Image (cartoon, rainbow, N blue to C red; front, side, top):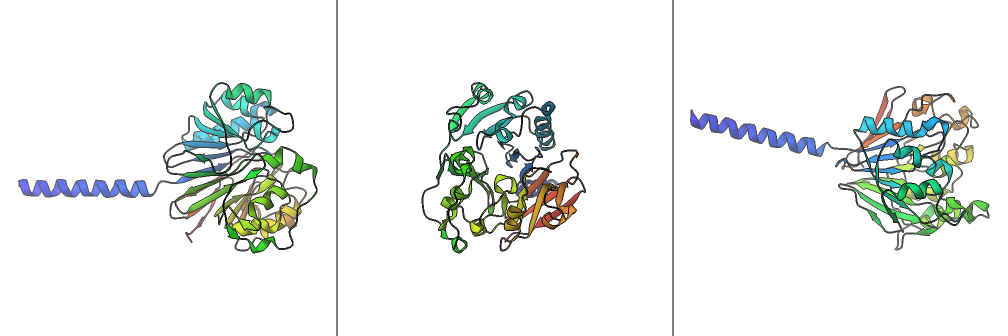
Length: 333
């Protein structure tokens, strides 16, 4: 009887160990693309539970954007932000900081350094980071989040050092003369978030010329699975094709971003399986918007729903549209 009991106990322990291993293996990296009406707020939740929030949307509007960030955080079981990364100091990216602190504490603030447009930090943001830790990041830096490899690839107009893979899509692409190149967009902090074989790139509002510096003639980012379109789906060059994104997400609003030239360039990227949009872009019409199934908010006066991506370390990931409960899984490659 004792031997039977021992075998039963050993079997139970083995089953529990297997269950624990399976549960651990099934942990996901979750990314929430929050609707801030054409700004940015992207919540990254590691399998460990640690968090990275990239930008905070606008201020005002009755705290609308912070309410939406808090709703995504609640869904994710998140009660604090470990790292808040501000890509650059435009209102649609940094404006919501003060409102955010009313709802979620932030441990560490990350940015590219003082704004080149005002030669300093915006007052509300400076007051916010005075309450926590603050660090200026540079290309090549790592953001220490357990289970993830988060690498800064652009910041303060500079790009990560080292060689990349030759990018054949650079042929014929030249620099442009634009006032944007002298502003905060050009200073955007860009990051690549890796979880095992899965790779996600967010380059903020990186400008055309800075994009070329990062991707041409060599692609210093490498191949990625998930790409957040630069400048809310504004015009970009075919240099981005070198990253060979499988899926792109456009953080546009109904009247901001999602410009037809930018939309067409992303859609033409070789190997792109799908483009998902936070909004139907009114200026694009049916011709330059994806089917409604892949759009989270189809009306201008919407409920501000977010898009969720859950990734496994094997490189597979699932995108879920909460508006229509439609999900699509992309197998590992």
